[in-house]
Image (cartoon, rainbow over all chains, first blue to last red; front, side, top):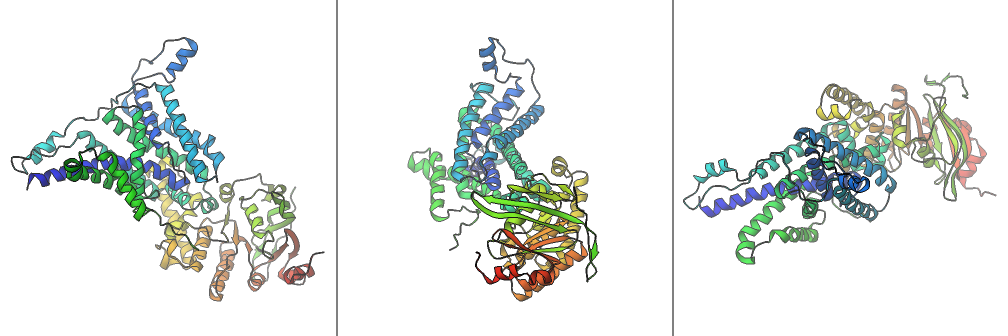
Length: 332
Length: 272
């Protein structure tokens, strides 16, 4: 096999890995959008907040330490203990569930039946509020996640595949972290789909996504389901935040991954879980391949920054509901 | 304070029991418009109760009050001899009151089977975590509920379409699936908002049969809104007549038929 072909495959593999992460972020949007019609601008900040909380808990940081010090003139920073990773993850999930409940109780419960644009504005407010709370709680310095996730290149894969090509091929270069992220994301998505298909709450969730009135009439509490989907979105945000945070450190720019999810959503449709996954993979592979075949050689590189948006724009023109979204039909 | 009434047996051998739902002096306003003005009537255990009246009389609003979708400004709702506090629609459903809608509210994206299964949600007791882990009672419950649902599906003769997505079904069948979902909840009181609207004669006959059978076999108390007078007179034990938000008649089909106010309302005599 020629080296070019093999390197092409390597690009696709790396694209798929990146795509899984995009899909993960997009999934958080889809969950909330389907069940409540809210486009949650705060999804990215939720990922940041979840990652901050995880790191903070693991390192035994005192929440709101700066605030407490400023008010009481104390000098506290850490409790002086370290929390094991699994327990910390569990506690972070609890924090995200509490956050979901608070959001539902104090924001969206009062906005039921409002125009989508008003709900959207509320999530923008929520995003900036949460960003501020995150800063205040855990401080704004860049943190690293010490979950013990493998870093660096997957040597075994490189060694195995190096023999496939000729002398000018040195094996597939794949980051170990990306492999882990992909596996975790696949497990999470599978779990979510099974939950939605086969459990009482999952069925209720799909019912609410489909028709609020009918859901009420069979005895489903909309409030409960909304807290549930915000909690699930919080868990998805945690996973996305950890994986991206492990790559580039837990810092403010983490919240911008939400912007990466937008083109994925336009491709996959705002209402489809499979759409979010396939859309994420297409964008991931598409931008890597484009960079490798056209962007790099002819356009001076760095096309990953805009390729996804261009693809999304094309989709908006030719298939506005996305690949799997519900078809928009205006009956006259 | 509860009025008891004597149970009696109808001509076709069904027992009509005590008062189940009692609406007392209900008034409902939308802003300045009074949709329902000081209406009282009751629904007794085991009976088929019809609510009729011209368009805009407030019939659907009445049903929405019973099912908790609207909250009346004045009046009391008594259920099982106790006053009912203002409840949300899902809480009403959990009390055993199921309903269908005038303009069908089904889960269009789900199959017929899944739609009917949602009717069983209140019969699934296993908590969130057991459900999520598929542990303990969850599996057994799923099996039991599937059996109950299959029974309803057989009963309504929709076996052939059980795997079909609801969005692909014709109107008449959608109405039937909606009835199936409501019946799957094994409600004590079933509210039907124009179950036969837009149906042809054959479909109406089928639907009438299902309503009668549900009442007879499952002992479900039924309150229904319907415009087809033939159907109403055949099906119901007692009829409430509404016009312009007021109650203008209440009694057996024969009594109502002879009521001058009712005849006027339907023939359009001017209100002085």
